[in-house]
Length: 276
Ligand code: ADP
Ligand code: MG
Figure 1 (spheres, protein in one colour):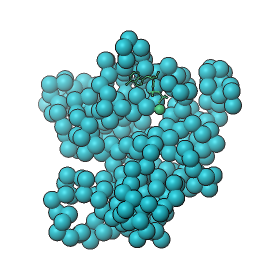
Figure 2: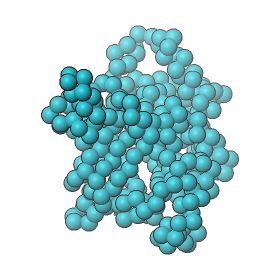
Figure 3: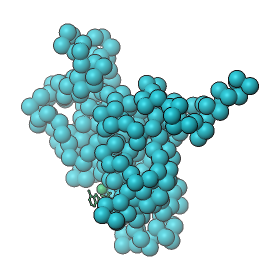
Figure 4: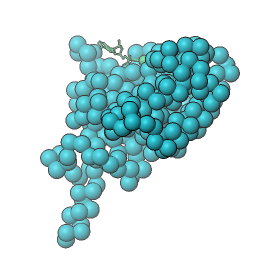
């Protein structure tokens, strides 16, 4: 009796709201799903930017979101990160964290990192210092930072700089990096916070083809260790990610599947890809 009661409490769908603490420290991925968006609607002056949106992201998954301008892609990210509160719907991070009850800061601290389109690196600081500063933004690290970097923190910087392919630029001032390198550095700065879910909005705008290829490699490397949601317009880039694709249209999911299946979906061709 006790045991079955316990089981039903663990099942997220059967937990009463009042039983859930506002913030739980542990991200519960026991069902393999890191993000649940269910029945989400957002309106601006009566216009539905998001309309009954349902989206599920697996732990470690790389997912690409495409769709015409105004489809609601950025608004969706605003909901996930706590910037915009939906009119209705639910939004869960793992089984137990109710994102709609958390502030933007709490959501970031819980492990959701967001990369905006424009890189915001500190131009007058080296790559190393940028990564160090990003680590300092983490409240748990901040109090100890001015003492000295621990071996573990140093190792983490080395690991991240390797991942983003900037080992040789470690001492270079960020202002001297190429546009693509700055974007990678910013992804590295997010990685310093050890996010569990990364949201990346149009990462390859303004990049050279070579930089785009390396960005695809980078995002593919990140998947597995964390989940990554990429919003992107460049179809060649989306194809190179070889990930499942969700097509948003008028604030809802129009189609979902491999790039190939989505590309051959007549509804998708009609509203989005037809002009390509
Ligand atoms: P996407 O990122 O897919 O291009 P957005 O999420 O930016 O689309 O926008 C979806 C729709 O919501 C658009 O029609 C846009 O004009 C509208 N919208 C977005 N943010 C606001 C806002 N703060 N106020 C009013 N309308 C908005
Ligand atoms: Mg957008």
